[in-house]
Image 1: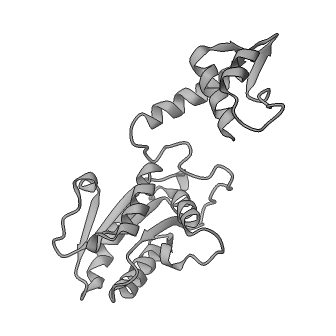
Image 2: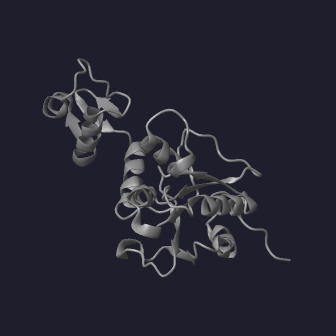
Length: 226
């Protein structure tokens, strides 16, 4: 959707309806010689207005975007991808600094524990598909039910990925070594502390964290005790 279409939706949403000539004359700035807005607007002579279902959709999305998105954000997941079926692992995304010597053992433990808990964890370091790394990170986070972010050392790449997760309304679990305090903006997120020389301490904490992720589908719910 190009900028001109976005401008047209904005104008029609604000004004209710507009004269076709006024709409195109004021807002159209793209190269299109014959702009196609018929698919998003109802024409009544020379007057244009948005379809009622589209208006309701915009209102609902605006309400969700009035604050930080949550797990029910309509665009938090790719709508073009098929629904995850029962028995398929839940997707998780792991953001970690790559350079430290402790990266590999901690990464392996997080991935293994995720698998044991019914998740398939994708680590940003492991992305190997050709293309822009930022696009791949965005897509991986968008698919995820939960994002695990190790903020040890305040790595800027990790915080970039964490910001994308917040913008998409993802549930986030933070990891940190020792007594490192998280920045104020993320101080309310679940924080798991561990020691670099004893990453096995993470296992039990991660299991609890994965179990606490809210279900996306009915088949994600834990069976009732009985």
